[in-house]
Length: 346
Image 1 (cartoon, rainbow, N blue to C red):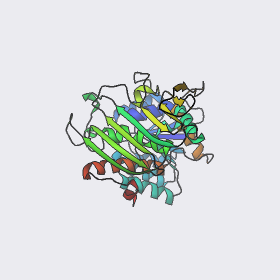
Image 2: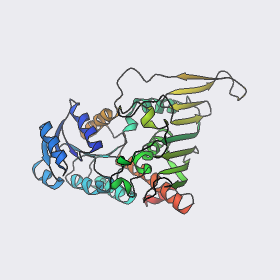
Image 3: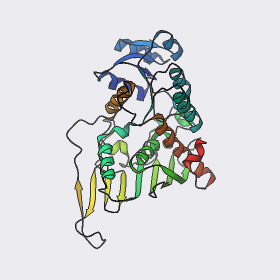
Image 4: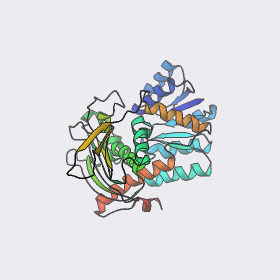
């Protein structure tokens, strides 16, 4: 299958590498106005176009991966949806709920698949955790907590990362929110606080949130890109080799029969009776010896969706619902009241 790539930046290059290592597809063209992208296309001996309109005049790929800045996701996506070409949009689905909703509605009208690039869902650690939760091994899920503390140096912040939508809520916590939804269920309401105590500017650098799930579970989240710590998915999961690995935990999920630590895959259970006076044991379950490449698994799912052999692991609607939670967190911090994400979708 012929796959196009729009946006050959940091995320785009990762997708290019994944495509080149997949025997079921080939990199058909790169669309990006930069000189660097042009030179990369020459190096890879693939077609190059500076914009989508020119590309669609001459090419019709089987699918496209969009890895551009969030603010142009809608514009870029709709050009391909108009041609009924399936798309995988790098997370978040868009920069705001309204434009993300427009993408989902238009794709549904055109009967065109849209996937959201929340690749962590495809991680074997997460897949195994989901099966453990669904099997009832943890009992009823009562509470969860996610920590995303990391430190981003000044040279990380280009122009768009200093503006609204460039903070850790949309860049980082959106992943954690999506996994909490995927593992535990839909979120009914949120309360939150945020600050830009360290960097100032137009976007947050730290936030905390309280979650109430529709099934009655409760959750807490903490995110900051100004804290030196080992407690984030990036630094604990071995998912991306560019991040130094620390054998730590960043997610905790607690149930009436056991608790789960991720990504270390530790389960804590009572030895005999369930009581705080009784001993508790800890065990690690294996996720198997197979290779764990979430971006590769995500691409395989995208290819299977194009072939109409599978449903999306993370659909456009999933991306929209996750984005609604992020926007609800922002609104709750601003209004100092609880906000229901579903009200933002109306």
